[in-house]
Length: 243
Image (spheres, rainbow, N blue to C red):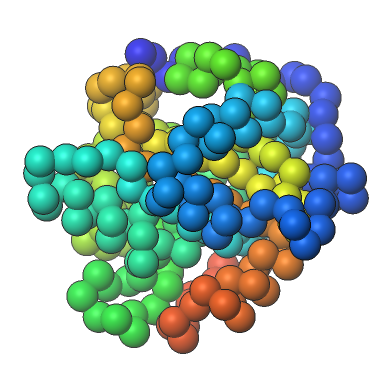
């Protein structure tokens, strides 16, 4: 299935709309991760299919949590997914953009998969767009955010080289959460053509689910309750894309 879709022109919610902050009983990336690890996929899909239409891409640092959902006979492949989408991955950063609909970003990943106290650095770059719809998410009632990894290399790091050898593609939607909008994401394995268009190997089979929260409360909770003391290299200021 091709990744082609239409750039969104639909008005929607602002990320800072207080109505999207649901309070103490609301969703966090860690409660959503628990749901994925408990294989509550039907509930997650219901949330995904009934998301919020946002008026712009999220911007800034995002706390993240993820879960591998693909069981593979290839032990190395499974361990790689666990490493990149698990303990070594802390979320993403989305760059500012003049349009608010097309931008770039990086993943917050440990610099080394071998050293437990390695720094978190921005790597594994992606292009991102806010789209009206996408063929990989045919039941989604909201607009969607896509993350395209056709050219993930920056330095490059070992993890980036691995991502370039195992092409992946993300689609995410926003739902109300404890601190404000939280993003529910799905990841597919496939291939990119020479023009950066992605085709999923099996549109009905995910390799991972991930969750992002760009709200300051989520970043604070991550630091207080879901951190191992690793230092992090932050992009300050966050780059801005002129488009």
